[in-house]
Image (cartoon, rainbow, N blue to C red; front, side):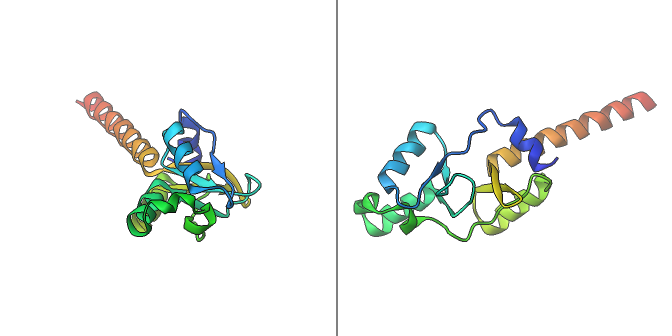
Length: 145
C-alpha cells in the first residue's frame, strides 16, 4: 500500500500547522481540542520547518517545569524532520518511523506539505492490506479444492 492511499483513507485529512512563534500553551490547547498528537510547524502552511508533538511538550514540562508552556514552538520543535512521499510504501514509512522512534511524519510532494501520517494510520493500513491478502489466499485455496 502506498502512503497516498493512507492519506486518502484518513477520516480527517486536514493538516494542522502552527507557526514557530506560537506559544506552547496554545499548541497544547490545539492538540487537546483536535484530539491529535502532533502539529507541523510552518510559517506558510506549505513548507515544513519542524514538527511538535505532545511527547515534546510533556518532556519539556517534565524536565523544565510548568513554565514550559510559556515557551515558543521554535524552542521545543524538532527541526530535523524525516518525511516521506505519497509514492512511498506503507512498509517503508513504518520502518522509518520505527527506526527513528517517532510517531508522526509529514508527507511531502515536490517539497510541499500534502499530508501528515501517524504510526497508527500506517499500522491500520498494513493490517487492512494483510487481511486482504489473507482473504485472497483463503479464496484461492478454497477454489482449488
